[in-house]
Image (cartoon, rainbow, N blue to C red; front, side):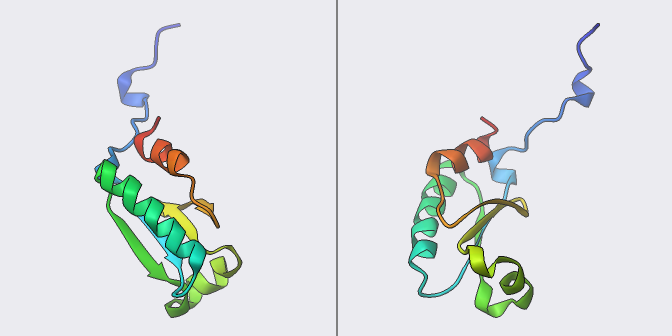
Length: 95
């Protein structure tokens, strides 16, 4: 059987086309730790990231309150509580 056409292979988006979202709240020690990891990894890879405050968004509060900090990659939950630098790096580079 022949290899699948390249048209059907799903190519991972380039790191700069990804988006990391940190969902947390002010005064949260784990959120601060997560932000340091995100700043480092995203800075190294050129990935844009944003920070969302769970206390200012009822939907985020209802969905993630018991898990913060929560990290999303392209809108999908990647992890919560603690961010593993190498795991996040692999997620963003497709490696």
